Amino acid sequence: MYACRLCRYTEYSTCSLVYKNVLKKEVGNVLHTVPSAVSDDPTLPRSQNAHCGKCGHNEAVFFQSDTSDAKNDTLVLIFVCCNCDYKWVA
Image (cartoon, rainbow, N blue to C red):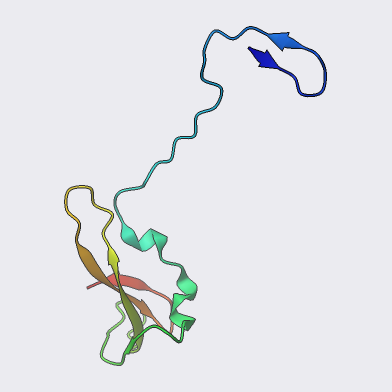
């Protein structure tokens, strides 16, 4: 039965489910979840030998992340350019 919290109105329900929260985990590109401001994080390791495919800069921060692939649980190395915030997987 549905009931209003403010007045005395009530109504019979045809279903026992009142609310359903469906969370979808996007499988696919792991780079969508990486914020661009991660290049400013001083706690992440930096590489001076990375080559950005967008601007050609050599400095990038990097970290490991899971691929969000349901078939296999693998880790990838994600690089973020310190100059233009371009992200790539190595």
